[in-house]
Image 1 (cartoon, one colour):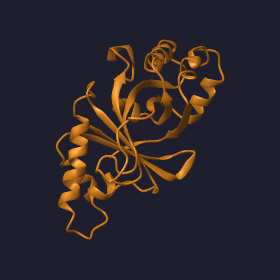
Image 2 (spheres, rainbow, N blue to C red):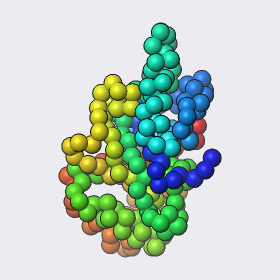
Image 3 (cartoon, rainbow, N blue to C red):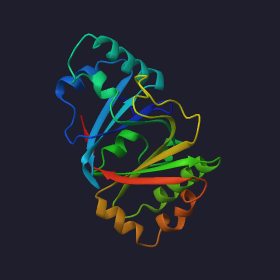
Length: 226
C-alpha cells in the first residue's frame, strides 16, 4: 500500500473492548473503496479500552463505506458486521496535516508511527488559530533533537467528532471547537517518560502545545497492524 498522502483521513474509534475486530469484519472493511489500512491496540493506561485506527483515501470514502455497510446489513440481525464497527464508540476523524514537507520528519506518515512499538497519542481540544503551526514546530524540533527511543511523529486536524459520525448515527463536523491530534512513535512508554524528564526538545518546545488550546488528552497504545 502507498504511504499516507496529504489528503488521507485517519479515523480513531475508542471501543469498550480489548479484542481486535474479527477476521470476517476486517475482510469486509478491507473491501470498501478508499480503505488503506487498519490498526488496533488497547490503551496502556486503560487496558479494557481498545482503539481502532483506520486510514482512508478521503473523508468521503470513509463516510461512504459506513453508509454502504449500513445499507448492506440493514436486513441482517448480525451484530458483528463492519457497519456495526464503523458506527461504534467515540469517533474522531483527522485529516493529515504535517509535518510538511513530509521529509522533514522521520515518521513521515501515520502508518509508520502507528507501527512503532509504542504510540503516544496527544489530542488538543478547543485549539485556536496558530496552534497547527505550533504543533508543526514542536514536531520538527523533536525530530531534529531525536531523543533516545523516539521513532518519529505526525499530526492531523480534526474534521469530525462524535459517536456514529461516519455512519450518520450521531456526531457531526467541527462546527464548534477544533482539535489537533499528534502521534509520536517510541520504542516503549518508558522511553517517552524518560525523555520528558531530560533536557532537550521535549522540554524546550513543550510550550508550543501548552497554549492556544482548551484541554488535552494523552494516552499510549501498542498498535498492531490488522
